[in-house]
Length: 581
Image 1 (cartoon, rainbow, N blue to C red):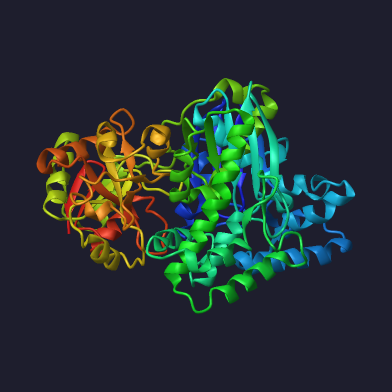
Image 2: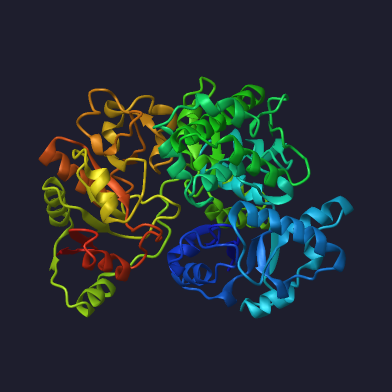
């Protein structure tokens, strides 16, 4: 039996397991550890959980796909001549995203030193010790894969396009690489353009602004995006363009700091000086405009060059839903797909897919398909849920599915916040109706009071979960990004007639970030929204992730029940059970 485990040990670490070529489970470490954006180490809890869901143990794993990322120091042989480069690059890493966990070795520091000498990392990795200490079988095959390739492959594999342009943008992968443009054609993925010079990363640029605004980089970029709609980009636009812009070749990024000594340190210092005296709204607006004006023409040029009409995107930069909206609007783009686990969370799937392709040539070509679901995490049966409810001595009622949807819809229509905990947990950063808080979208003040209730400080409105049948009635330009919108990865302009009807889910700029809910994908959630539509005439509900500020989305019944006990939600639909605070 072939059991392929993909391990993403970078930021937002995760694990994914394929059994006989089929994806069985994928989970981010944060959902198990309950530490937001947990990463930069081996995701041991996620590894064990995906294997548990597959009915397997570490001794059953036959193949392991790894990133050049973070590993316990005992697994890495280091020569003395690597020390200085390690020190410099670790300092850079701390400047941008903070120190990595103690005892974890940052492999990318070695790659920077080894590559010019024509050497690879693998001889320095103590493979046998790794397998022994981590509890895997001694004959398990290990392969390391390039960071950007582990983004590109799942983007292409799950887009469902027989051939397409594949663009990856993030903070940085291996050897300074922060962008790749390639083409999937005839089952082969070829890279044509890269940005791989220090000081040119679009992801690090946005992260630097995030940090300078007082937020946490690699975590709170969405706050900068939301804040941008309240500001004017003009006062800082030209100054910020010095820190990021399209290169003269039209196919890569550059800046005034490209390739210079301590490029990212100096770019950060420059941005800090440039933004002095400016409002945070204008800073955010300038950063957003500069990002869009660098990435959009890069993608447009590549679509023209490659002759492709379909576009697959991945990498943390494409968590930026307004950027994705501009890309979907390009006349060169007929269809656009954004992989839902666009941060480093998705790298574990990339590692596993690449390992499968290595062992079974042609696997990717044979398996390309439009993604149907990301409900790849743990689910809990009725007995497990009941045990938790009884342990808390809570009163509850068991309802059949139709009655549960109706009861929840009535509560939502009455102005209550419902915790909706059903089926298997979502993979990726978005709550997509299995671990969601649901409320009515008609209350213009809900953004303020619900954020206070959840201890959040958000600038974006909450997102709507919309019956897919009504998408074109409510939003503009849906067709190019219809599939992406099933996973809440793109914004649309809300039509004027609808904006005053659903103010809680419309941003100040008139956009919304919907999840298009199909009955064949999530029938119970669709039934809930349909029941609310019958009561209100509105075919959508407000959907926000089931968590409080700085906590991961809930995973198991314990966290969901705690939210009810803490009065974060008024009602809880957990499995077939209905509870009221």
